[in-house]
Image (cartoon, rainbow, N blue to C red; front, side):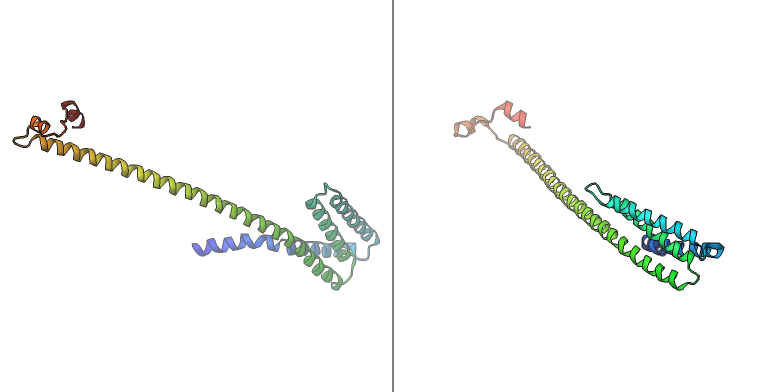
Length: 202
């Protein structure tokens, strides 16, 4: 059962890593299907794909410039432009050499762009984990201090109760001694223990 959970975890972790290759492979396969259905040497289709690729690249450039540029939108537009260019060439060409070469290049570029986001995401995740670890350590220290303080208070209370019980037992034992005379103690110069105080402590 642990092996199944480990394999599932490995597949989930590897899926994002395979996404660029799956995307470019899907574009190449669809383009070759399009090639087999009449796109080969079709100037109109080539012009259409070139126009779409240039439009996507222009949109990416516009999204990237300026202070309010959106890097995610720009990256998406450039990826779409590359995919359209790959699809146009793979659909127009009559052999597999050029489409495969462009597929390799597109896959390499896709992994290069994705690696940047993966590094940024890993860095943010490490910062978050470090922050949470520091907070856990801080709270654990506070909990340890509070636990020590609570144990100290309980021990002090127990010692006080034990002292009071011992004192009460000593007073009881002294009063029950044969020949105990408080007046004689007072005459001898010892302080007399009043009855009210004795009753209160007992």
